[in-house]
Length: 199
Image (cartoon, rainbow, N blue to C red; front, side, top):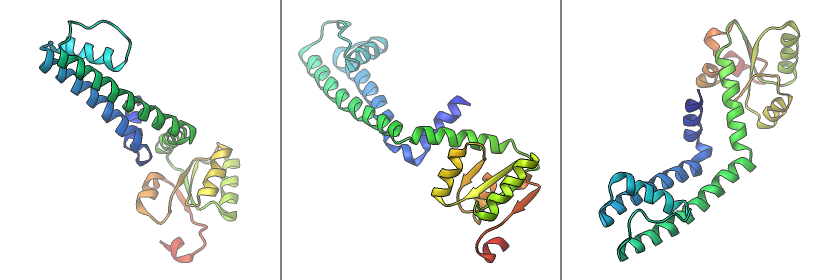
């Protein structure tokens, strides 16, 4: 479950900068390892170890004495890795500060809970009628899922923390599928437009 959540996190469009950071870091390690093998003739393990201690700037001694070209390569590797790590740290910090990671993980948890539901009720819209329906269902102990496309209302629902909801348009098939409509026992459609309710 942890690896699946991490994979989903990386594929999420809001985390493009984190994906780029990981690609850059992996690329540095691969380039460094290949470079030490080609320039200094290190075996794979020594080349990888040399790359890690160089990129990590931990100050350990070289595995073997470096040639002039090897020292130049090491210097460029350090400079490039410093810029990459600075960018990566900035991207991760930005995601944490903006709450994107927390919001995503919270959403992932909610989606997992929704997938476990059966014989539940789907409420399309959390306006006056939708919120009243949710209140009645909660009082009776009936499981339900709310679909709401207004971001402000979704934030309000999220702060309450006790309502399963999906942010999206209830007239879209994929949103209804996410609400596990096939396993639901009822659908409440208190939407503003009769055409949407009919759909």
